Amino acid sequence: MKKTLFLLFGLLGCLLSVKGFAQVGGNDKAVSTPEFLPDAIYETRYWTNMANPYDSKVYIDTMVFFGNERAAFEYTSINCKSYSCRHNDSLIYVVMPKFSSMEKEWVLGKNFVRRMYQVNVNFRGFDRTIYKVYVSDLENRDSGMGDYALVSKQFGIIYRYNTQGEILMLNRIDVIRNGKVMDEIDLLPLHIELGKTDIFTGYD
Image 1: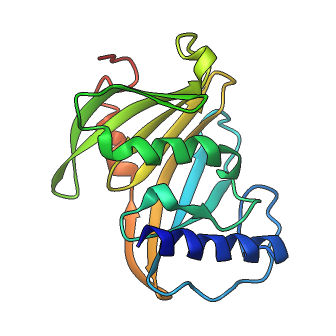
Image 2 (image 1 turned 120 degrees about the horizontal axis):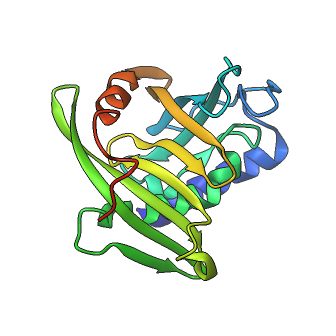
């Protein structure tokens, strides 16, 4: 199954090298749209730049994966807002299934991932565990110089910030499969609940 997934994403990568996908965000260049990959999950993800109160723009990414295999994901355009974060996003999604374990730190080659803290909040009628995660290269693991993210196993990365002052909040996700919208998830109520916790200041 995993070999099939990586083969499909290899084909997706080939498509990306030939022509871009329709995508708003990044440099906002719209290009031609391919057909949907059968049974793939497409998440259209809407981001707000929280670091600049004068930036009213909504940045849109499209993430594609199969089943619950976020570790084998791809962004559908090199122009999308999160494409520059693709490497660290991949590290987070690879270790995400282990966030609920006793482990707190993972070394992946020359990269380092730490689960720093977690809180539980109610959203859409269920208790959701949100993890605060730190990612850096191995040499800077204890320096604090790296990228931080709030992560949900159900919704993926929902907030990201770094020591360069960049802050992005995920407002909404549209879930699409076989060309049909399966769900429209407004994440603002989740962020309101998170604001009542110590997720940003807490540390395990």
